[in-house]
Image 1: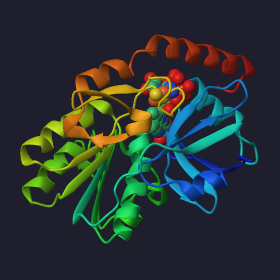
Image 2: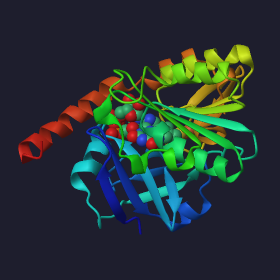
Image 3: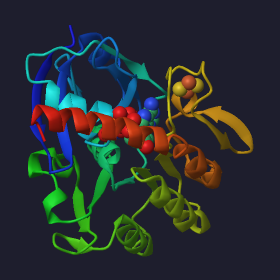
Image 4: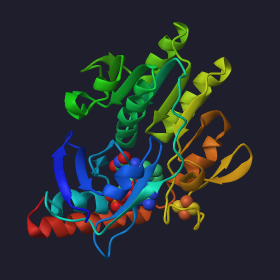
Length: 281
Ligand SMILES: Cc1cc2nc3c(=O)[nH]c(=O)nc-3n(C[C@H](O)[C@H](O)[C@H](O)COP(=O)(O)OP(=O)(O)OC[C@H]3O[C@@H](n4cnc5c(N)ncnc54)[C@H](O)[C@@H]3O)c2cc1C
Ligand code: FES
């Protein structure tokens, strides 16, 4: 049912995977995510969607910890995932805004960048994509960038080896000066998203960003992904994952996002040891 139909490297740290899931692909809208499980003993993994077309879900995944590494090393085209649930979360409002910017600096954001701007372009907006990477080596192949759905496309790298030196905040600052931002969407590193919120706040520019939190059920039942939003408790999975960034308590979000680092590190080390014994890495 959830057969892998394509899988390839995007960079040394990220990969693309495409999975058959017709019921999910048919219902998915930009802003929503999926949760998959690789095998019957696997954990539930929330994932943004890059493309939902022809009964298939395309995703960009970073080789971060046990499950993302396992999917990379042990699953091939033709293999099946145990489960794929979705779409989950709230879709964003796709309508005519004028100049729509999407800024991203990590794997989930790069997927959302393409998916959001595709819909916004189809709705008649002028679309501006900013995609930030650490260095030239980590920049995705052109086919997987948001270039085809962007009227203007900017790449930044930390070291300036490709595109503009710096990160997307530098480009956003310039676009604001030129009065070219009617609304901005963004996804990626939580620390940069919190800075973006402060950058756009004085100008009153609507700023909608993904708020990633550790999710378990993904449907609002367990409370794991709770955030403070406008002084109230909200669940990133059910009420988001995209929120008005000016109303998010970023300090609380950043604190809660890292609460399982020790356990994740241990699981990754154990899995890498298994791979080393098998001679895979
Ligand atoms: C709405 C949403 C969309 C996401 N989209 C993407 C995406 O497009 N590409 C991608 O690579 N990753 C995405 N993630 C994060 C993804 O779920 C984790 O990278 C993945 O679970 C890592 O699992 P692991 O076992 O490889 O690593 P682990 O060692 O378990 O975790 C590594 C890091 O991944 C994150 N993470 C782990 N488990 C969860 C969880 N249950 N919920 C949320 N975050 C978790 C944490 O930041 C953690 O520190 C998304 C998360 C959310 C909530
Ligand atoms: S993941 Fe359980 S409430 Fe959101």
